Image 1 (cartoon, one colour):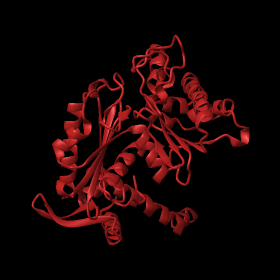
Image 2 (tube, rainbow, N blue to C red):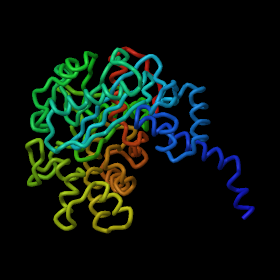
Image 3 (cartoon, rainbow, N blue to C red):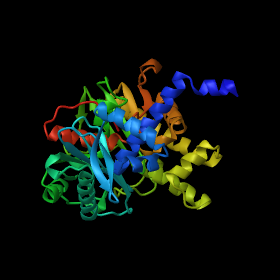
Image 4 (tube, rainbow, N blue to C red):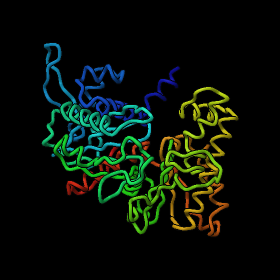
Length: 396
């Protein structure tokens, strides 16, 4: 018993525990925007003394900001993330959810909110919702919209850079013919930039993630859809109409299933997460992507096979793209990438058997380092760029 007690008191273990407690406190403040120290203790399960000590330490280092407040007639310390001289907002609209984040000029996320979306959501409803979330989160940080320097909005569809509108009809039906930037500017009175989510993810990986230091990179966002962000010689490739990298809408199977873009047999309709789930639903009932991944990790042979089949299909298609672009690295993100090597392993094997170059010239294929935050961090980075603010390394 004594030996166990001594092991628990080793400096390494104490340092690890303290770092874990810091992370719990920071995550709670990011989620809620602002909490008193008493509320932080309740949200994290840590003792009030531990919370007080860590808040004091992080306030001294400039990570947290504290201010006197009152709750239920009693004095309290209100805790928020320090956000320096201003804020930017990032809005990531995918097929099934929306994420709205506030960040400081160093791209450190200081408030974060996610909401589910109906399959056929409409731009007016969701932009109204994003506006309300931004206003609420700004207020929760004891700030005002005057401190909001810009907004980045990214959507899971090609965007015409000249107009800020979805460039291809059918892909996001409720967003067709909507001037997204003008709509958000009208609601909030701040500068707005609009981009495709895979392009935004590629910029985030290049600046902050697994593509740092690389010049030629392919960033895949694999979820319900399949998108690609292309970095060539250190620059994002958008194409003439903003549809470069619409990888998921490359036809693969002549008599394949219908795709939401209006064609048939596209990569997304064959190997995207939604297609994989739909293929299993008839046998197993309604599945979520989390169910699929957890079940596969637990050894479900049907789920493992479905993920591997999707990985091989995407890997072969990626090999063809590599023959055209010759990237140094491929970064895989998106919700489906949470399957890790269950998806990436078959992708890598299919890629190696498809690319034109010799084995030692095959681009390395790695998982995103941004923990599902690449698209929204890209939106934040675009907002920082739009406001003309120098970039720095972020914290998601």
